[in-house]
Length: 616
Ligand code: C2E
Ligand code: CA
Ligand code: CA
Image 1 (tube, rainbow, N blue to C red):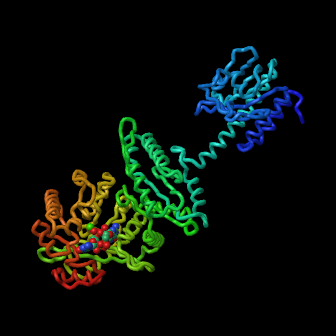
Image 2 (tube, rainbow, N blue to C red):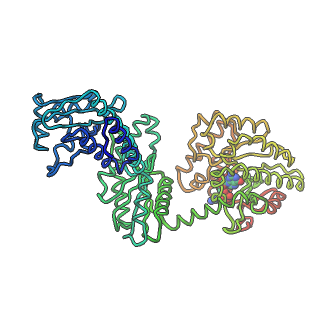
Image 3 (cartoon, rainbow, N blue to C red):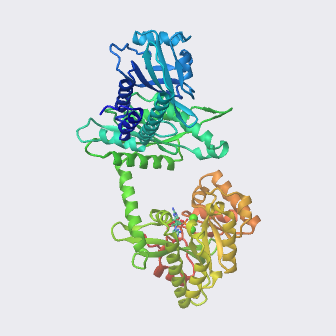
């Protein structure tokens, strides 16, 4: 029904706009203009929105539609800077303006004239106001002259207000759509849109192979720490721009968040080409970036995955590339690693381990082997080190390297550690009960994650007590890196152990990052020279120099010194010459079962050349 009063007009416009959404917005606006034109008997009515980012007013809708609209349309996008005063004033228009023929608006008349072929006209321009911001203009044109009453102008304002509301709603809706697919910082495709597009590429029947590169910038955190997050952000934006600018036009560049990017290479790119592309990208990512007045550069770790559509899903391909980049990181960064099936196998084993470890921390699946430590001069056994083994029902016998780190990353380090200490103390107590006068040290490895646990000291005290083992007979081995972690916490724990009489050894000494200054602040009793240095002892002067300096260090700190990994008589002799007389290694004994260890302890000493069991 056609509106007959001003009130009916407003009601009708409101009802036209209630259900409007992004897709129907232009059509609805056009309908509103149509209604207004009919009601007031106008010649032209238009709605323009302000795009303050590009500094222009943009045509949204007009009624009637112009026939023979010129192309390009001079009324479509009009930049404030190069428009006449009417258009320029639209930028920040706050009040209604009325223009009547005979005014001075020649540039405007010219532009309208070129676009519509009409010269003299009267116009009302009503701003669309959203708070302080002018978001658009609503224009009402009558060829020739026309007067407007205040009531009519108020209705035009009411209509403008309704349109403003809907326009804002549409803008929000559009930006939601946009940001659902784009990364806010870089404007690149985001994870959602990457998966969307990669799903298409990996759909069965699509051309293959499909290669993707997973980039992870190395040590970006330090940049954030030194220069602040906005510098880190600018760096990421620059890298994103380089990737889009310098990758082939058919490549898709996405940012997954943080400092992670994914490049999906164009059709039919195989592994070799992907590797070349990764090398090229690695080079230009490495180039300097100017941030303020400082230049910076960061290398990238790149993981490559290549898959055939149908054989492999988008999610799987991304997972592969992610695993490959983890491999590249593990090489110390600035590396390119392609995913292989071997990696999948390793990861699967890790998963099995992860899944079965918790239920396997029982006497049924775990056991300890022991490796003696001897006095190089006499062969006397001074200590035994407990080393954990896992008899996995599916994977067979597992060495600690394959599951200690899993235990640490799944919060099982504490449980596993408590089992080890408990079992070691129990077996140690049995030896003591059976072998009169036995006075060797029991060495037990402690993982860093275990040491920082709050109940650690209580657990140690309880286990010693339960098994009737004197703290003075136990030495816990911790790696050097623990020390660097949380110095205060470590100091408290080490003091607590000292109170229990338990001694502490720094394991794998020389491979960590601790400084002497840090080590000096802590109380410990023994240094174990890492087997890497011991291995080099016999065959290189530098190996000898390193061990020599560790010996000097131990002397000046008044620490006991143990060499581990002694495999040859040459190494054993060199150690004695340098003044280290405690040693552990295959030369004397491999790790052996508790039972066999009991026999060795009963004998009390090991002579080099004694027959050894081949494995434990
Ligand atoms: P580690 O504490 O440095 O233990 C010595 C490792 O060197 C043992 O390997 C031992 O079998 C090996 N080894 C001994 N003599 C020689 C030798 O002459 N030559 C060579 N090449 N190797 C020798 P294993 O038992 O595989 O243990 C590896 C690491 O796992 C240990 O290194 C230790 O850090 C960790 N680990 C072992 N048991 C436990 C445990 O119960 N708890 C924790 N947290 N870590 C453990
Ligand atoms: Ca050890
Ligand atoms: Ca060691």
